[in-house]
Image 1 (cartoon, helix red, strand yellow):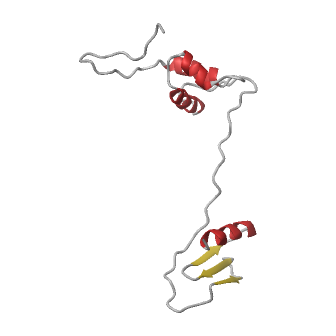
Image 2 (image 1 turned 135 degrees about the vertical axis):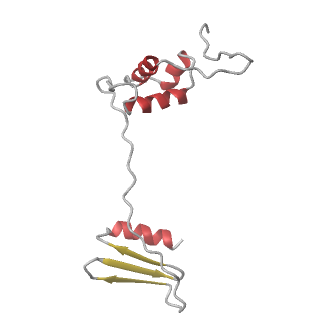
Image 3 (image 1 turned 120 degrees about the vertical axis):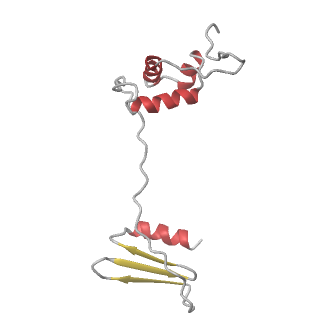
Length: 141
């Protein structure tokens, strides 16, 4: 290994390397080529693979200039989390009720209220049956 990025500054402390932007861009582009291995590219350039992954994110964000990915080397898309629903937290009722009741009310706000032993879930809006099943399953744990 002829090149080392691990240089010591005056006083014996390690100095953090400051890689040129063009070097970061070049390695990021190289890592997006079909069949490229981030680990091998990082190892052959004496850097940590996690650093190269960081440079790849920054490259895609345009921090090193306009990204120019090779043909067929589109980055993986990050799945977006499902949208959240509005939730009201209501104090527990003092009286005892059956373990679970479901009461749907037709109103301008489309309200669905589900009452458990120790909780009440009130959902407004048009909610899919799958979402309601998920909410009920999680709340009955």
